[in-house]
Length: 342
Image (tube, rainbow, N blue to C red):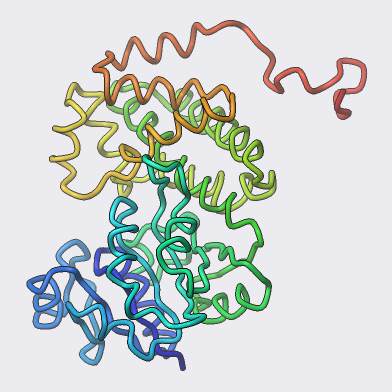
């Protein structure tokens, strides 16, 4: 049994707390809000996970010191925009080598740093790993079979985290490609906004399939240019997470996109969803990274124009369809031997 602190009592932090508790670990959940911590402690139910009972001996606190003290592992589960500020609050209580598993998905817009890089900068004593993949909290909290991947600096650490999370309903793989895992988990939210917009415009399955396929192409193209591995983008934190986020109504990014396709502004859509829409915060960072690494990302570009410059979604889709003609492989395959790269 391990002593684990969950830093962030949103739906994802709560779902992972339930998973780890079910695996026999001692779990405490921290909320930045005293009222939320008291509500969870008294009601034993998360308002956004109705019908899911929180065990009577699961602890809740609004004290970050209490949540971190003597904890072997911390799961950082706050929205991406609060990762740096939360890490600053955690800093005085972080022990040497304390394991922090980041489960938020995003890129810091002001620095273009991945979230693990942000955490390492603020908590230099910590051992930082990531957990990502196609995993909606609504399903994990109910024990629906799910698979994810852990990225860590070394195999030993990755396997230790794998053992903590692994269960009959939650299969965990390991990978050394922390960067690729984080990029896949962040950038898929931007593509999911596009998929939602297409749904809001009442386009069909053909459009959704095209956005998913070309979307992962954009993600992998940038990710590999930055040093990520192709295998990561064809895996759980790449195409896997992209599929579920583009297709599921649990996806707040897709739901926000649907509203924008129906004519809502970005601000109106975010208010209606009433939870953090990570893709909105990652979109500008993704576009800046595309420019920095000189990678063509037309879907990301059009999403930014719709979000922040008021572009009509139908016009954005039309411009995607009518771009210059090109080959699917980017000209890397030979006509004489299609399986060979030129």
